[in-house]
Length: 308
Ligand code: KIV
Image (tube, rainbow, N blue to C red; front, side, top):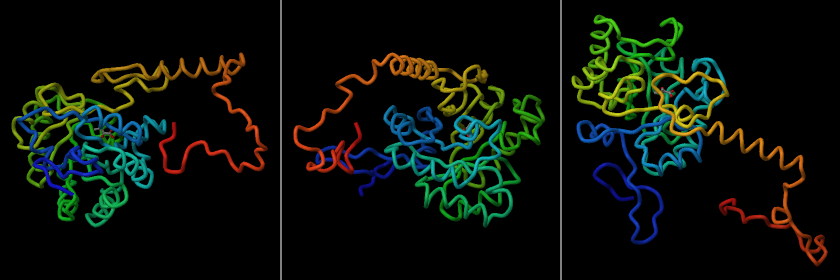
């Protein structure tokens, strides 16, 4: 393993081809003031590989999975067990991006010891190199304990979806001057505790810009305007992979309509099966001139080879 200036080089490389540099939490932090950070959520191996190859800097295995993959109305039911399994798929597939595990509800709310144990599962079992958790002052003992266990922490302020019941819904936070001051104060406390980056969700653009100027770690906005040091979106929102008729939040920019592509592909498949045009001869197998019983099993693709 060799060392780079912004991360450790990992992964196999053929002679003469440099291995991609894997971004670390300190590397993400060092982007502050140098260039914008592009982050997305990811929950599975093929999507992570595609987003990584596209140059996404940070992949968050977000508890939004509970809504966009498992169809729940909020994130509160996300289980650590399941999220660690998804994290393993993402981190095993991303070569360059920093993979961050999102601690689900009630995995870091009780004691610092429990928070450390749960955060470490994302690292040891899930292959993540950092975790994210929601909230301000009330989380400081847990953040400090996780950092003391050598796990980088990303903060999350503003609309914190795990607080949806306490907040009274998914609402923009920090519109009033007192709320905006409180957000800035909380951001500074998280920075003092040692976070490497801070997600600001659904915060007025001017408030997010003020926080961004005031703290030395990157802010990564979602519905927080252009003044942040980076942006994050939920992958399914980005590409329109949503339930037909689902409401898209105002802050989402949709770059593709994958939902329509999937619907049309499935409808074409249904039509082809019903008409008998699928499968064709080329999509079928011919029997061997020798007796198949003597030839042994037909090998479709070798064990360990890429499935085509
Ligand atoms: O779970 C998630 O996807 C998140 C992002 C919205 C930041 O926390």
